[in-house]
Image 1 (cartoon, rainbow, N blue to C red):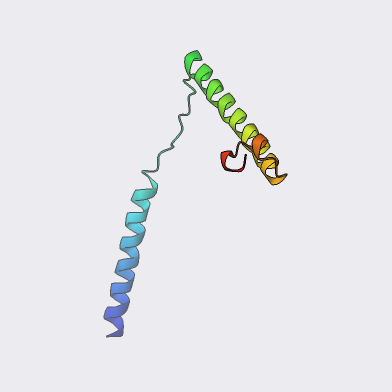
Image 2 (image 1 turned 90 degrees about the vertical axis):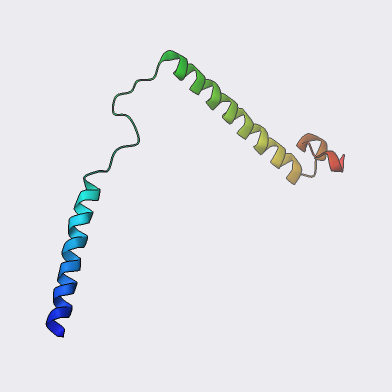
Length: 80
């Protein structure tokens, strides 16, 4: 009984090792190694980054105004 259990255990360990070596060999990178961005893409990315930055600044200013109990500056229509 012990020998058959160890045989099954060692065989399953071998299979696990075998299949894990195949999966490691198939990992691909999600980013391209050669940067192929065109000027149009770079311009669009810059525009998106500017909008996101401006939105973040506006949100922080509104949050600060809300915490200082200035509802009009915070843009809270319920408390005006």
